[in-house]
Every structure is written in C-alpha cells, then in structure tokens.
Amino acid sequence: MKGVLSLASQIRIPESIAVQELHGELLLLNPATGVCVSLDPMGTRMWQLIHEHRALHEVLDALLHEYEVTEAQCEQDLLGFVARMLEDGFVETGDVETS
Image (tube, rainbow, N blue to C red):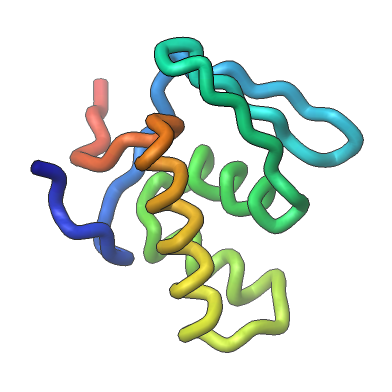
C-alpha cells in the first residue's frame, strides 16, 4: 500500500514515461499501461516543476510565486494533479535516490 500523499511527499517521474511538447502543452505516454494524457498549461507547469524539484512543498512554493492563487487552492490542485498522475503510473512516490 502506498503512503498518504502530502506536501512532504517526494515524487519521481519514471524514465519509461514518454513526454512530447506540442504547442506549449505536454503529451505523456505510459508505455507500460498504454495510457496517454494531454496536460493543459497549468498541468504542464506542475509537471515541469515536479521534474525540477521532486519535493511537493518546493513545487507548491514555486507555483505560489508564479500564479495569483491562494495557498489552499494551489495545494488542493497540486495534490489532485499528482494523485491522478500516480493513479495512471506517470509518477511514483518515495525517497529520491542520489548517486
């Protein structure tokens, strides 16, 4: 069973996920499941920040600096986005490995 998703969560994007940019938005393909999704501009930015930071509290901080949104709304949107990405296998939770 996976842990509870929170701002303390570390998120990792598996190397197998195929990403293609198209007109400023991202298309994601999970080859293991065949699931393909298109991200709107906000989802695209969340994905980029997850790729850069991995720690959700850092992603939230970056979004709050970039967008005029309340912290509560931003947190709800971010956790909802990540939950959907987890469900379809586009991201994983857990400790970030360092080499």
